[in-house]
Length: 45
Image 1 (cartoon, rainbow, N blue to C red):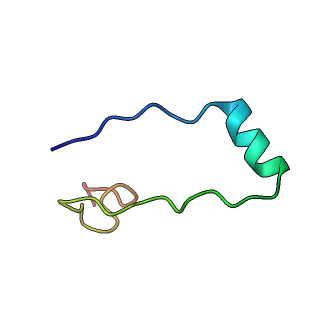
Image 2: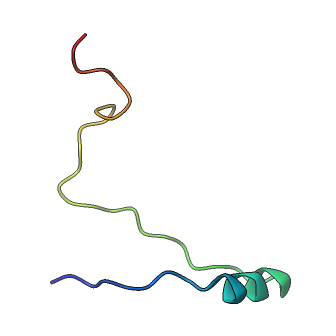
């Protein structure tokens, strides 16, 4: 199952920040996870 959502409208974001409200925490739990450093470290070394 997948959920594809639209991004937040800039005006909505600005209104939330202006009212000193907190934004929800983002989720960064992806599966399968890439090995750490795969993007940063060169693979030919």
